[in-house]
Image (cartoon, helix red, strand yellow):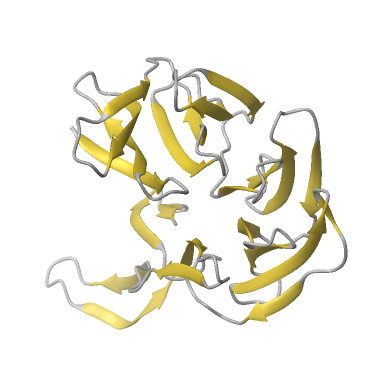
Length: 257
């Protein structure tokens, strides 16, 4: 058993986290910093995976991603009091990479792919009661990892529209865009936004190192490589692994981050 994913409550006294239990699925738990026994607040065998994403500003609900056994992902609000779940959206097999609450709790911002055959994401704003939804960022590029600024006036997100992974900001009011997005930081690399301080500082993690796939001819008997290995073309540079040739050698399958 082990813990996976965690978010801190607004008062910094509780931590919600996913727990892989002895029955081989994930439940949602809350631990308090006073050292008392953690509390299971949501357990459902049909929702095999849970990911807490944010506490509501009042601390009464947890914005949670549920991923069911039938490959349906769901945006849900789970009560910290009784563990009841309110499903806001079902998204088939795709799932948001980041979800965040508006500072007063009225809206939720998240990213998601909208076409099964294309990996690029757009950003949406969802009313916290599930009653309405609007597209906030609509662009052919990959736009992801949205976060509200502490004052609620902007949504900050990542985008590769300029050829590198940059940080952008778009003004928002009433859950709708109020102007064009503007780049505020260029070429952060493979970063993962963690959140804002109350003063507006963005904290993020940075993935370092790389894994790529190279192709080269070699001598079967002696094992010597002929010439310089060439990198296999991929749009996800630095995040490719586990290659395998098809039996006839016409295709190369691999995984990409």
